[in-house]
Amino acid sequence: GSVDGNNNRSTFSNMGIYLDIVVPGEDIYNCLPNSKYTYATGTSMASPIVAASAALLCSMNFEEYPYRWSSIEVEEFLFSTATDIATAGKDIYTGNGLINLNLALESAKAKALANTKPKKVKATIGDYQSIKLRWEAVAWANRYQIYRSTSENGTYSKIKVLYDDDVNEGD
Image 1 (tube, rainbow, N blue to C red):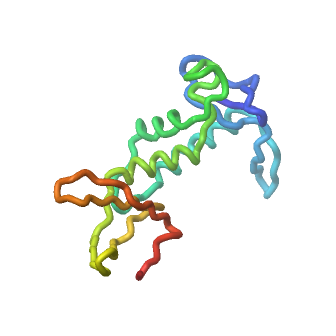
Image 2: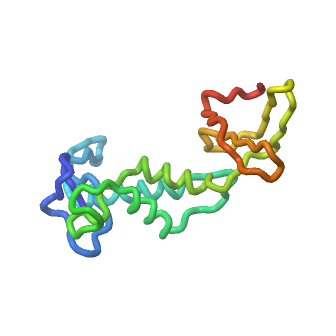
């Protein structure tokens, strides 16, 4: 389906129980032959945005997660992360809501990294109160959570979250 610049359903937009998602479809800058451009309106302007969003999800390449998302998973990422702009939940006017590509990509990344662990982890004793940790970075990871236990079979407590900016390669 299509919405205007104010996220209102376009008057020409499809509606009904089969409508899944909406994207901008009015006044979209468009290419014409002979290096010309114009603004165009219609669901034919909206559908490439959905197709491109799905293509971006499909193009995500995780070294540690060599699986490609299925079409059902791609739909789920797009539908579950859409911004609700009408009646709460799926409705006949805006489906699951306005596509939120950033959130869909972040959700896919989180799912792919959920069970990924760093490789080549090494701990070196510094002194009586410190330990140095080294590991091989995980592609796409932007933070690492450090846990510790003070007993062999004890529970673990989070002691630090390291973000990309905190991690020094080679240190």
